[in-house]
Image 1 (spheres, rainbow, N blue to C red):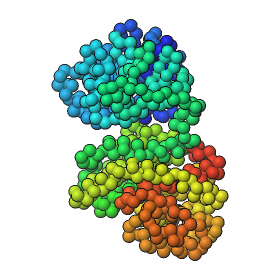
Image 2 (image 1 turned 90 degrees about the vertical axis):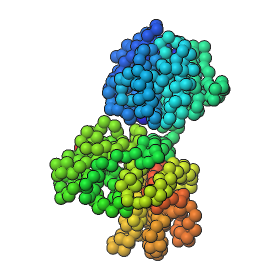
Image 3 (image 1 turned 180 degrees about the vertical axis):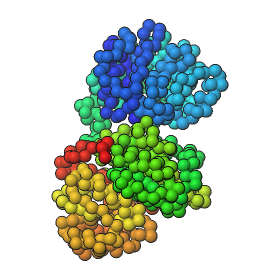
Image 4 (image 1 turned 60 degrees about the vertical axis):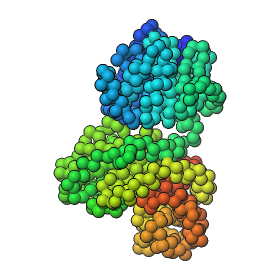
Length: 591
Ligand code: G6P
């Protein structure tokens, strides 16, 4: 996710902005840039890669400027696509976070009126819109420009001839740091804390004008007051947004991630070009770790909704196994796009004649260069080693692919899409019950073994739940299809091995209840994840984690969030180093 910093005050703006951007580095970025007002001109630098040594840059001796770290969305990482973006006159500079959904039509409109574009970004239209509306009043020009935008934005602009910054926010965060005769506006609190701990959180629809003698906030055409708050956190706490760990912060970002990923691929219709599926007879997923579990859910969805046969291979096995492929579409799922086994498996799949599609979170990563087709998840940078929000974003893309390829009647597809659209709300509901999940987790924290069970789509849900538990709490957690327990794992059950059961509201529900009764007969503690109005299950189990009612295929989202929180709070109770578990890495770049 991109970072924004704007400064007006008495210090050198380039130094303040570079140091502020460096405070946002933990969020990840692929390129960056700064614009500083120097006399009646704008001095600009843009670079690909890391900022590195702040002292190495001497942009201009001015104390008003804007800067940006970019995590590419529209257009590859490059100097041209890096922010700030300028208008035709080169007098206006804009930095922006968010996605302008109507940028294509705005761009065509502006080009027809003679505007020349340099980059592939959605942001550049904002600079040109401000230029068209500028008649000496920057605030008015920004106000008019943003009224044309659809989507989300946090933006900061400057005009070479004006001693002010103008910022606007809609559905993308922006905070104003209030110092002594200096103001710093940024997308995130850590960028501000070196200069002041007094901040004003801006709200959707706010327009801010920053001048040397103070600031004004406007909303709905009226000047308004917003209270400044004093941030009690250290910079490190601030990077975690006040959460104790990145993992918890990232789980809490999930509703937003679902919204962004849906926004990318869903308007009236599912906007995924599925030409990659033309003429295929089978799908082979290749992936590792959590992405492998997303693939297992993908298999369930694609087979159920489309009838196309699907196999799922561990990337590390695929490399040596090299199975026969028949008019196959190989789908590689990888958050980082850099997992060595997945990359090698993709190369081999290509050699074996498969068409390749990569579902990736990191733009411009190696997987995107190997694949014939790419679909991005919009999870933003994920810092915690344990994948959480990126897994849910992968599921969202898989739902959309399966629905788009399904031969179901339009009315059924629309009903499921409507259900998907309310998923962020359902996830917020689960997050609202976090405290109950924490209490259950704290009861589990003393055990050394656990068994996760499910049926149907509940099997990969259980596998991912168990993976989360073992990687961050170091409790040995296994996952099994509930029907397989009697073929071996029953021998492990008893008072010392709690069982976590995912109850899916489909044809597997009744038989799962029977399996739970069998487990209870072995005296294991049972924690069930079940729908909020399920009054049956509570008769047989020790704890119920309630999740909102949804279509059975979407329980992969609701149950997984509940199981991520269960693992998190168990690990927290055990005092584990949650964000960086022992012996594990976020991105495994060796085979
Ligand atoms: C590592 C990470 C896991 C991740 C796996 C695959 O093991 O710790 O969280 O699921 O790699 O990573 P990828 O980036 O390919 O999804």
